[in-house]
Image (cartoon, rainbow, N blue to C red; front, side):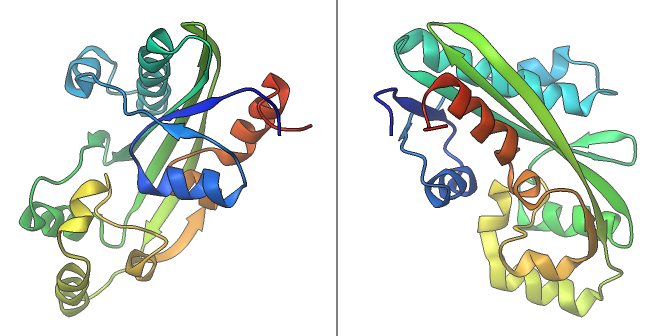
Length: 198
């Protein structure tokens, strides 16, 4: 490995696990900021652009505090029925959302950005189309009971790497994108930056 340091500007357990699994050495520093302010100012018809913008803001915020490190920011948006979906505040809200998405397709947009010396060096986004199956109310009850409040940390109220995989009949897109990071482009940029061996 190189002498370059990488900081992940995200507290996401899934993103952390992806980088660890890929053998990428990194530290974690959550980025402070109000995502709602950014969302309010962004065009709601551009959810992919919002994912990238949020990733950029996170990367730059942490990079300004540690300019000598490479900083990876990441974020994800969910587009459904012509609007943006935010994390459910309660399990009842998660139930309502999953019921609405049942038998339908929604899109996950995973954005990433790399910054160094307080400057944006690279950013990108990838999209996955998620087709939920027409699951029963009984399955939904069992799912919510099994997963509990951990679902409130996910924008779609599911974890594809867990029992949430049973909610779907098809996914068109990259698995890592679904988990919240366009991993292949990120790894390519980390190699180009000298964080990873080429």
